[in-house]
Length: 253
Image (cartoon, rainbow, N blue to C red; front, side, top):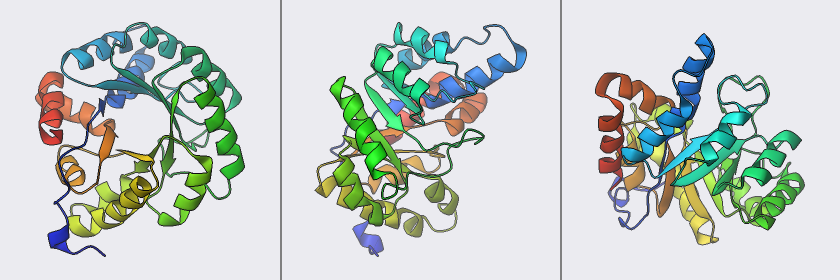
């Protein structure tokens, strides 16, 4: 375990991408609840970029209960920053990603009935499948990322799969942060270091918020990207969208 005085000393040299997944899923959920096209997920993405977000993430699920597959095609036309598509690589998803050719695709092992992402990949059991999918996306020039729990036992198999990046699933960090922030961050710091050591980039996401993002960033070596979802849209209800995005950017600078 890292000592407390070893934490929060990470060199501040990382490039941060604030991917506004919150904008897509939550805005789309409100739209779908009423029907029609209001609020507009396209306009929300345009506003997010205008207010400083460095990228937009979408997570189309098979049942399209929030983001629809058509939204992905519509957003491709207007997103001027990085465009990241998350999802379970079923055939329909793979076909869409290879047509749209986003900046990045993040592979997530969602069950069809999952309310939200709730675990990373078991890269040992799914190594062959993930390697095939990663290689296919790479052949289209798409940067690849795999959603992963902060467990070093998976790193050897991740190396064999050879994605460009790993997105650390941060639900446990967010849950434990109020009780003991140093304990909460420890396994993430260790895992991120080992991932960096094998030449794979580190992203992170899930339940990161204004309350815990700064400490996380300070203690993860070479953190390249964070996806802010549910927390950012709820915080925007209190503070406004522009102010909330700028607050994240301040904490990540």
